Image 1 (cartoon, rainbow, N blue to C red):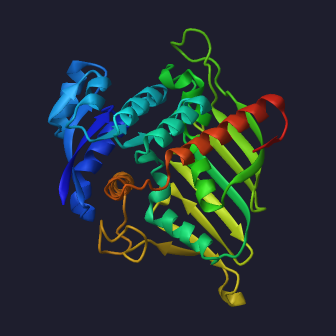
Image 2 (tube, rainbow, N blue to C red):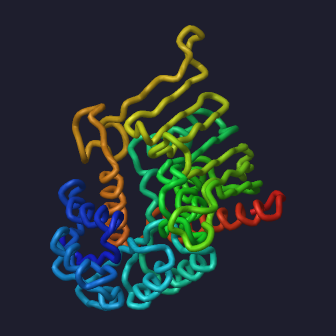
Image 3 (cartoon, rainbow, N blue to C red):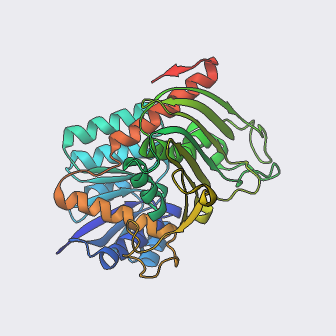
Amino acid sequence: MRDIGVGIVGGGYMGKAHSVAMSAVGAVFGTELRPRLEMIAATSAASAEGYRAAYGFARGTADWRMLVADPRVEAVVIASPQETHRAIAKAAFSLGKPVFCEKPLGASLDDSRAMVAAAKASGCVNMVGFNYIRTPASQFARRLVQSGEIGGVTWFRGEHTEDFDADATRPASWRNFGAANGTMGDLAPHMINAALALVGPIARLSADIATVFPARPGAEGRQTNDDIGQFMCRFAGGAMGHLSFSRVATGRKMGYAYEITGTKGAIRFDQEDQNALWLYRADDAPGLRGFRRILTGPEHPDYLAFCQGPGHGTGYQDQIIIEARDFLTAIATGTSLWPTFADGMEVNRIIAAAQDSAQSGQWVDL
């Protein structure tokens, strides 16, 4: 067991989540590497000091370059806005430091390609953060599909829908400007990653993307990004699918949900009830056929580390702790674990294809 100095760029929503995860992961999973909260970077010296004191870091800085270059920072976690990811990752890789980057990997497909190239050239461990697929229920769903429990997959329906922008009178914020901050850049990556993990590569798609509220109070000019999007697709394995995304889905708070239909059964999941998975088996006796609700417990992936009681449940922060365990394991073994930067780039590639399809009105082959 040895410690490893961790630096986190960004102290807000995800910066806090990763700071808490790095503090807890050693106790939860007994990892070989034990994180030492070495430095946190923010946009000002005052905010950096506030985050340092609140989260327990040794030092804070207003310059991410100082964090990346510091010899006591041995691994870098990027939890800052998308447009900063490329420069931070390339700087860390140039110094031979492993990098965990929040999704989406880059603010554009070009960014993602450059980041993957830098990771490959450096040989450093790299990982991108798609936390929702790590719930015990979704890990279990993935195992059920891969084991053939529901037969060959014929259909996938996935959504990531929320309502944080459903109020047309809400003043404009940074979320309403720039493609990377729109629904396709912000919400879509999570469900696209889920589709790839659960069903496999997407071969072709046809997309439609729209802005529901083009003008908001306080905005200089009009909103420049999208509120809703959807696409039909055909997976490389033959299954058909439909994915939809919205930040104006009134009533939906964490609508990360999917249905997987197979030749022998089906699976349903909804993140708003993240500790349950619904399973249908076609070979049940006729009078017993129907979806059964399976509550997650110690028998399901990564549950026991958090709780010994079935049905007691895990939460959002636990997903981030699981990510931290995987990142530390990758560093300890010198082998990147899924999802790598290349996996993150594939999500960006599908988003770019969807944007092309929506603009042309044509199917796009991947």
